[in-house]
Image (cartoon, rainbow, N blue to C red):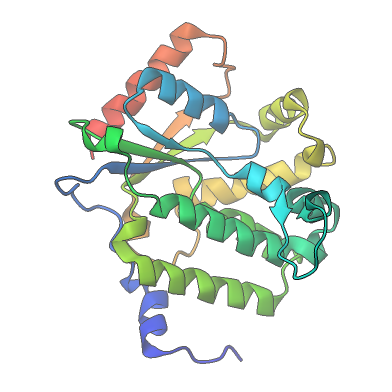
Length: 269
């Protein structure tokens, strides 16, 4: 039986937090959006394109480098070269051993990114926009959920992860606010093609089946709205779907059209 939570957490799980979505942007704050999508769908390329098109916006890239080089704290004097671990590689090699560790660290690193203060440059912008490459929400409702369903997270690990996730978002409230999602949508086959093209060593063993599973998770959460979410306002969060099955990286016309759509979407918030 799942242990009873304090009243504050039970209210959180019921959807009383955070008040992040569907709220008007307050003076001095920014529109905050997350780019979501499958592995190798083109999020980093899309983020760079946004930065080039809208240089006044503030971009937060996915902290992959932190996952690839985790420094361990030790009381013993050891060389720095012995003090790092590639957690991303570890979770792909032994998912049942490292999934809980990775998802906890991933959630924390995403949370830290969403808590970063607005830059001075952005504060001086008439219509400030912050863009995050994935969010604490996809961490839970895409990746951790999928690992649990695959059996790589045990039931007790999944319970602890969800309680921690809910508690942290309750504590930080509006500081983790998002106003909507940009969902980059492409077929799993196209994502696999791009994954092989970029050649990230940790990802070489990823199979099409795994990308198909993640695609289904994204569709269920962001398009079909069948994923059970635990935050009331998250259920009504604006989602803008952008089909990126076409390779837009070297297509100026396609890039211009994608940027036009993003700008138009933000005007609707």
